[in-house]
Length: 311
Image (cartoon, rainbow, N blue to C red; front, side, top):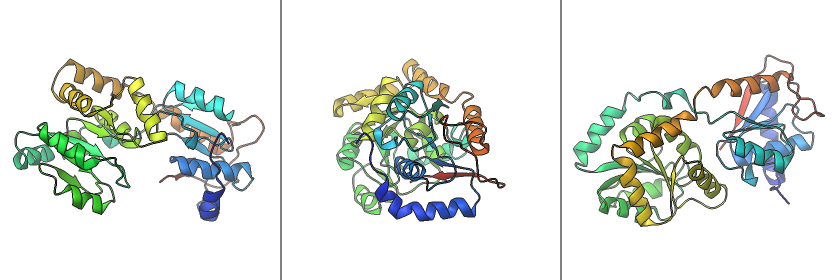
């Protein structure tokens, strides 16, 4: 079919989600992960979720893994993504721009200390972040780290919860392999670029923090689509090979007009974008915004709240 089935996920998580919605008197569910959007869409389509589901798409691409017509509404980062969602699902889609925690748009107080540590422990090397996501999944991360080290960079590899990956990369010379990190703003403030493989939340956070993004070896599926869309919008580089990666880093890590323009373009996305998101979620929760013209979207009638589902 045009979108994946939510049935397997519903069997695994439907009961727990409905329990949380009832217990917390939730007025609207906000999936922020593509698998969660499939679950809520399936439940809504089958009358098993009594409150609206408003999908917030953290990626720039509208991959079909995000799309289930059972969801009431979609919130997108760009008009292009919103148009694709409307065409694919027939559901309303609004443009809110990307949203991140406020700490990513303010100077990080820990950035200076991290910069000094990088310079002290790895003198003469330019720190660049390599993101493998929360699960620690990447294509040939050891080869990429060695490439960067040979080029005079300090690859700071974010391995997420993949301890085996972290331990293995720790043996690559001139490489700093880290596990799950709570201080991403500090790391982004101390680095000169992000090498990303997903075009998702970490890349969006980097744009907000003023850290240039280079996509390299993106993972298959919606990750590749997101990386291509970011590059197409002029928000990042998509490096097709080793030489292109090093060339992009050379241009974007050194001070200059190109770096400044890239940072300004990324930060511009976040200008006054929180108000539409707040307004749309409040409207869905109170039932004042009929999300499909036929099915009402009233809340549970309690004091209520907003429930987020993600991975």
